[in-house]
Length: 359
Image 1 (spheres, helix red, strand yellow):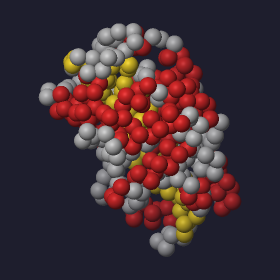
Image 2 (cartoon, rainbow, N blue to C red; image 1 turned 45 degrees about the vertical axis):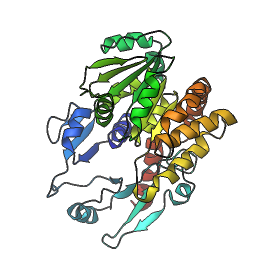
Image 3 (cartoon, rainbow, N blue to C red; image 1 turned 60 degrees about the horizontal axis):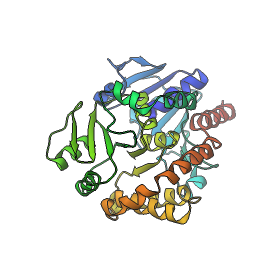
Image 4 (cartoon, helix red, strand yellow; image 1 turned 120 degrees about the vertical axis):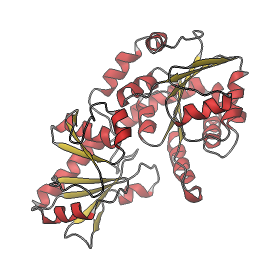
């Protein structure tokens, strides 16, 4: 999400942006331009967060994302800079009500002569909104005019039948995945499961008794599995656009699934004492609010089971039956979100206001 935010800020406002990344190997897979420390991709300077942290001149705005805790040496450099940078604590995405009351609040710091500001992404007014880069829907709609079979063929995958349900899978570990795969295997309706390289690919392979690697395809009765190579963010968007259902995880793919305007299921990152279920229920509360009762119940039952509270295989048939209704709902939800705040624009306005006030 940080890479996408930096790219969007550069595209919208032509600013200079630098992003510090500790996991360079993962960055290099997402961004092939990351060949070395200091490389530039889409106008964003890519720097390697190492220990000790390199000396670097702070920018006008410093964003501390997802509680990464800035190194002391950099905080001191920020304190020595005149005027002081705007320091943003960029928080995790949540639909919980309290987010709106904390968004934009200052947090004075004892270790620095300036404040840190909380900035929350969100789904409603009063939050920072969601990242939506310029031209996203134009690219999506243009790509979607191509038949899914054509896109699949370009990626070495054959669509079994015209009425095949195409599902993408990007998730954390799922203990009950084998039972769901059996459910799909014995279904009367063919299902094509597309799995980008990662944890989910290993889990599906284990459940099916094989070792899956990118490029592999296999069939088990009504289920066909295609293992896809690791892709960059734009390639992952295309995958979401061409699927009938997207099983996503975390934050970035969760948001991109909503912009895809397709039915989706969110695998939320598990947290201690199951507090992630509070976040899950908060989102279900707003996402399912305008669904009819049958669709809402089927949606919530499968989402909860997918996140460890129930049996995904048992809740799948009812969920599958309401997918046409969820398709319409996904389009309406995307339109609803599009009318709300956009994250990069909200962040730009917020920082400009503070800079003007303090500068």
